[in-house]
Length: 202
Figure (cartoon, rainbow, N blue to C red):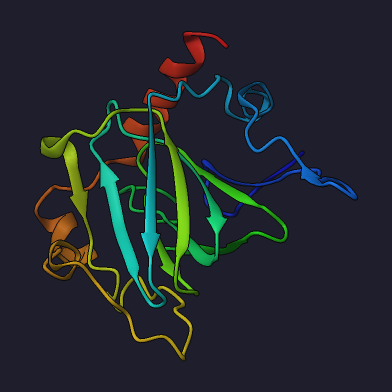
């Protein structure tokens, strides 16, 4: 598989090598040892989430308190989606920036985002099924959100999509409001936490 860094530190696109024959296709969808070569530690997957969405569904922008945070490895099992990594780490050189990656069942790409980064996606087809491998279990007290339509973030949603949000996401604060309330993780804390994970070894 090919692992490429995105412009936001701690985020990667993973493209598997697909083996096709007359029976179908086989590929390795996740390799913790390969990711460890880029992260400095092997991700410890503790929970797997699956969401099924109709076209236009926007989930996120979600993030967790650091430490421990929650790194995610996201791929599309069916359908297609635009996956967004948002840098919400105060003090980061790319604070407020986002990157979009198309995840579908053709290229079978995945996105890995480290602890402290914000995550969202927009489903491009009915029945789009996303699978997330997570390095921490769900902790309601440590989970937060930013409004996905905040113009200061400017997620590049498809023009022909009518966004569908959950009540929770629609009530989420803007990036500026989250920063002012002290809700956002700091880049320094996230960097220090990544170093701690690296010290634990692979």
